Length: 186
Image (tube, rainbow, N blue to C red; front, side, top):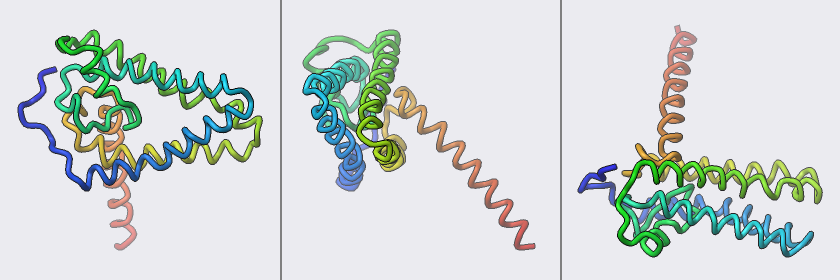
């Protein structure tokens, strides 16, 4: 990847929207830690370990990113790999192969973090599962259109690529709906 010398400059509004999108994530993550700790503090600690491992993988992805060490909403905005990258890999140059390995591992770890507590969520009460899943969905719905859309790394980042694909699909659906509603008016 060769980042362009000019990349998107995050505005205060972007950062405010970022923090707004963090509310559902923080509720679900902290809630999951509290819930897991009621069964065993080791379960909560394991979830934190998964989180930290994910940060290390994200740090590998941040090499070459124009936002490295600065405000960066990478990996759904919930990991601090952009700061950790400068510490772990201060002189490493971007490598597509290294990026892809870390991106794949990071994606897997995000799924592990999300799926790991589900057994205990359901064991506590089945109705917590829809709340848990809705909070994750709310985070993604608030985060991706406000952050991934503008990010200069969205042609490389798996999340950015996912958002770009979804936005193309949503735009095509919007066009289909406009055509259908236009036919109804006739």
